[in-house]
Figure (cartoon, rainbow, N blue to C red):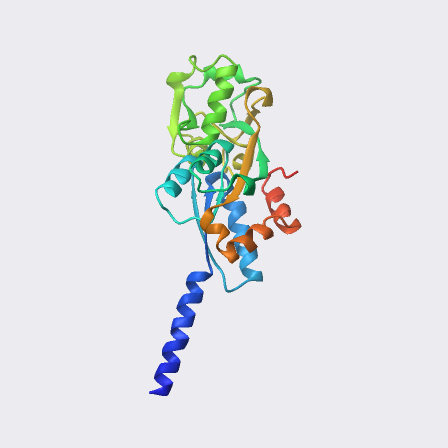
Amino acid sequence: MRSFLFALLLSLVFISSSFAAEIHLSVAASMTEAVKELVANYHKKTDDVVLLANFASSGALAKQIVQGAPADIFISASPKWMDYLVEEKLIPAEQVRTFAYNSLVLVGKPDLALSRLEDIIRLKRIAIGSPKSVPAGQYAQQALENAGLSEKVADQLIMAKDVRQALIYADRGETDGAFVYKTDALLAKEAVILLEVPQKLYDEVTYPIGPTMAGLANPQAVAFLDYLQSDEATGILKKYGFVVR
């Protein structure tokens, strides 16, 4: 009987510690590879933590968090969706900081010759993340509007659920081109960077990071946030093409 009670106690301790060691991450799709490596490296240092990452468009993730999805840390590809969660009082404003920066490019078939953004009017199909929820699409739409091209190419735009889907469309040749982040373009197998979208046409691509109220109450999540500010984490981000200042 005593051995049974001891085994039961050990089981309860194991179960409770397992729950306490979970960290839920909500991460913009464009950071998938970088965050996966950050998680893998952190696991090597701390084997009693389970990091569960959810990758999607920033807008979709923010809405999921508002609806009650578990999240300790949110990494957005746009300040807009971080501000949304701050306004919903789910992330303290004073805890938000800039994690990294990126830039916008147009990728497509290698045989296409484009020298300036205005040349895209020659393309038949252009993939773009849905501006309603995808920051990359919002930046692209902003650039098109400022360049006076929004209405001219409206019928050529193919909406994608996130920036990675837009990249896939161009990489498979299903569209002539796609607006994606420079870091995404580096992952393409067939598509190449046709041109870099002039920075003056859109707001700087900024990735804010912040802990939710639940994350602040989770010591493991706070520890992982500290790790994300380390030199090792910065090196991994730069490896994948992100700019860290």
